[in-house]
Length: 378
Image (cartoon, rainbow, N blue to C red; front, top):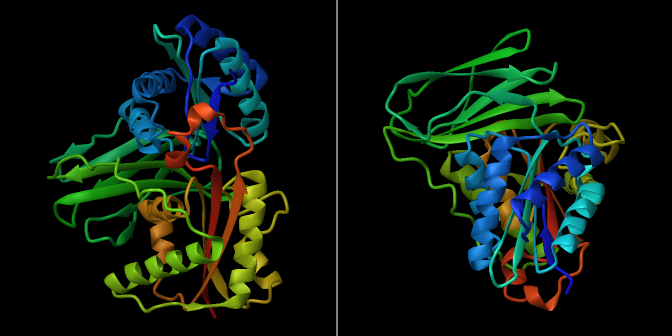
C-alpha cells in the first residue's frame, strides 16, 4: 500500500523504520542535496515528532515546531516532511522524492531525520529542513533577569537587524552588535511582565529573511506556542476579506488608522503571491530580481511600500505566522501606512493522498496557501 504523505511550508505527516535506516537516509540525503548538513538537534526533534505521530497519527504543525524549539533551535525557516506507511522502502523513497522536488534549489542548509515503527507494522519517517543564517546560543523560555544578551555566529555576510514584540503588542527595534562573524543583541525587558518575542532578520539576496525567532516569558510562565487557528475552508476572495478584517482589528486595537484597499497594490500582491506559490519560497525577491517597491511601481503604484509574505497550510495560519513575527507585525502597525493590497494564491497538494489518510487530511489541509500583504504610503 502506498504510504500516506503530506507536506506544507510548515509540516507534513510521517512514517517509520529502524533508526539504523534513519542514519542511512541521513547520509543519502546529505549527498543528494549537498551542501545540506546533518544536525543532531534536528535529528532528535524529528525522532520525537515521529514517535508522536506513531501514537495518534495527528499532523500538528505546532507540535513539530515545539519539538524543534525544545532542542534549542531558534531556526525560523522550517520545512517539515512526514510519511506514514507499512513499507520502509517506500517511505524512504518518498523522502528522497521530497528532497529532490522541494528541498534542492531552495537554499535549505541543515536537516534532521527521525524514523520509528510499531509492532503492528506501521512506520513513520519525519524530516526537518531549515535555512540557517545565524547560529545563536541557548535562549531561556522564561526569565526573571531584567536584561540578557543573545550571542551567536553569523553564517552570512549580509546585514543583520533585530526586533522584539513586547507584552503590549508594540514592536521595538533592538541594537545589534556585529564584530566580523560574531553577533551580540542586548535585551532589556522594560515593558513589564509577560510574553516577549525576539526576531533576527538578515537582509540578503532574497530581501529580508527571518533567521531566528524565539518567545519567552519575563516574570511570566513560558508562552504556549501550540495554540494555532483551526483550519477553516475558505475561498480566495472570502479569505482576502478575512485577512483585511484581522489587519483592521489589530491596527484599531493598537491605535492605528484603518487602511484603504488599493487596487494597484492588490494587483502587485496577487502577482507575487502566484510566484511564491510556484516556487514555494516565501521571499520578497525571487529570481526575477524585483523587490516590493519595484513590483508595486510596475503595477502603477507610486509611493513607499512594506511587504509581508507567508506560506502555510491555511490562510489563517499564514496571517497568524506573520503576526507572531515582530518584523511582520511591525509592517502591519506602520503609522505612515495608508493603503493596503492583499494577494492570495492557492496551490493544490502535489502528492496523492490514499484512503489511509481520510481521518488526517481534513486537519492538515490538501493545499498550500500563499499570502502577500503590501502596505503603501503615497
